[in-house]
Image (cartoon, rainbow, N blue to C red):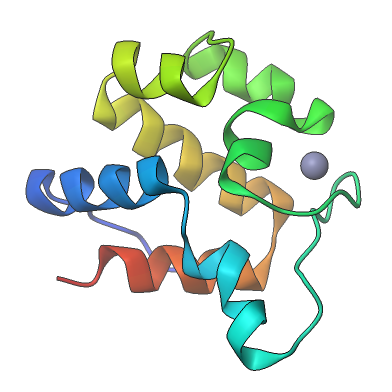
Length: 109
Ligand SMILES: [Zn+2]
């Protein structure tokens, strides 16, 4: 995986997409007819909420960036850089090519 350099404007765009929750990662399967992606760590259906909050296999890493009880909590109280930092780390850890593709698409201007 390449070194991802994300500027502030693009960070804001990414955060907005995450807030909406309609990411390519979790919704492209609806259009493509492929199986819904699952988490490579715990085999649960992969969503933005799962990656940022719910995956029990990723809790240790999540705690290094923030503690939150809901997505709303994250987006209201955690700064964008921490969210992006966590995402980069998690995508590397779960080693999911769909996640990585999504991340690349999301940061395109
Ligand atoms: Zn998981």
